Image (cartoon, rainbow, N blue to C red):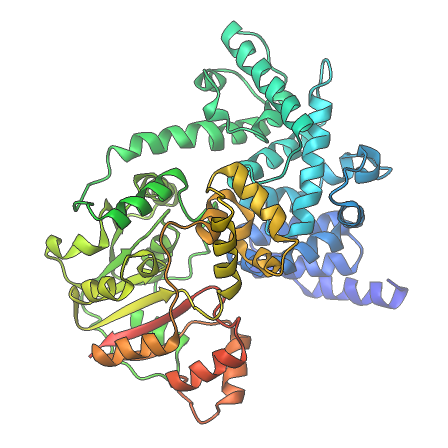
Length: 546
């Protein structure tokens, strides 16, 4: 940065008042000004604060990674060295650079990323995989310890990341043998009441969930440095809380169909999705206001505003969408159901931690919900119908519970967008791969050497449970816009609009300017044919019962 640029950045900082504690955009603006001035560590602190306050920024993960590499050139250089050498293992000196681990461990933005969300960048994942191996090599040495708290905090942050992604990082045989020995040493020390070095416990947590260790509850009785207390909260205390909560969740319906039982088993083993921080609370607004903002040119009949809005979130999983809905929509009374008690227990714990009290959770099979005798103003089924034996039959069941004029938010997989995923699923099934952690890690590695490597661009590629959902789901259907349109016509449902990123909507508007309401499904079908990845996540859309 030249002198003129530095002066401009300083003037910008002076014009920008110090952000309020909960002002995410203010912290982000200050971070940008500090970055321009070359105050990299201070910028990293402000970027980290913005992410914690507005976790939806993680949805733009490439931008988050680019920011990290800009504020810490040492990390950027290390990521590049590891990427060039992969899959060969570099020495600790080659990975870390001349400054060693300290300038990496002290980076507040990196620690925030480790603790807040699944790492969803392949180059960064490989770099962190190398750092984990290096920390393990330090931890297995006699009298292993770290004196610097930021170093221990980083090691604990890495352990927390590995717990979030369910230990998806690759590891060689020798590395796992070292991890096994270190784990066994911790178990023996616990049983004997002996001291355990904090670094050793942090290193073990990066390879195994601490709650799985025999006697793990004894860890809570010891005094630990602050970073380790957070790690133990995540890996021991919270899982114990969820086990207790399972028994408190109402069983609302029977679960008898073979497909429902198979899906239930998958999500008991791997609750989905993985999340840590709830999106920032932008409510409450009435659902009418929300839809007007999302679809300003669309036509729909507004719901009454003088009474509570009864909402069903079908297939709520670990509760992220239910919590967003309950906080966003004014006067919302939410019933959130799922097949998996493990997922519901996670959702319940997170709702309580966030103080969200207008959600009623229950275990239920979507197909049996009419037996409850309830009707709803709004039904959300984002990501559940395509896991039924017959998605359209499940949709009809939900429609039977929707009041006249009621609204539905639907999510369905696109057949066009998921072509590569479908090919990968067929390939791995033909090779006899199973949805075990070891096979999932192996498939992730092998996928990168195939024509289907674009699958690694999906966020679900970066954790065990989400990768299982992506490549090994026990039941999945993919649909087309034409099929959706036929269902809407058959059941007299009014299409309100697709939820898409602004750029995709702008591209559609440019291609079909005559469709001002953006509700012509024939035009959307043609648009998707020209832009096959438009609905790479899902078709996410709103309809209304006429």
